[in-house]
Image (cartoon, rainbow, N blue to C red; front, side):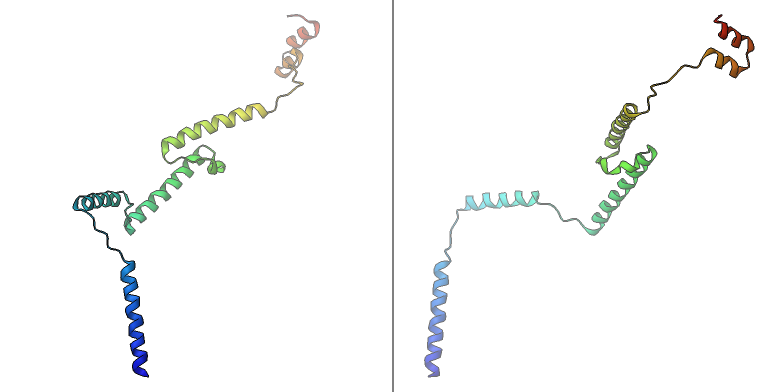
Length: 146
């Protein structure tokens, strides 16, 4: 009985191997096609991003941190640190241009929304003369003399 089971298992294994062999189709390629595929593969490999070493990653992180600090200091110098989220510059020149543009915009808004008195009255000649202690000027302003 054991011999029959072993024989049957071996037959099953042989059938599976035959099926796998039939599924695996070997494709032959000419030497010229192979060479072009190899050169294409090399081209593609050169275009792949190179994995950075830990030292290079640390340098990039430091540069990023320095840029953030430089940006904060420049904005603080121009009293714009509260608006730091609005600046997306990646270098000093871009940041300077954005700061100039933003400052001009803020000044324009301040001028448009600033206080403009409606009842601004020019001081009278009498009051000006009185403030200076000029009695002759006070008398002249009362009688309308110049």
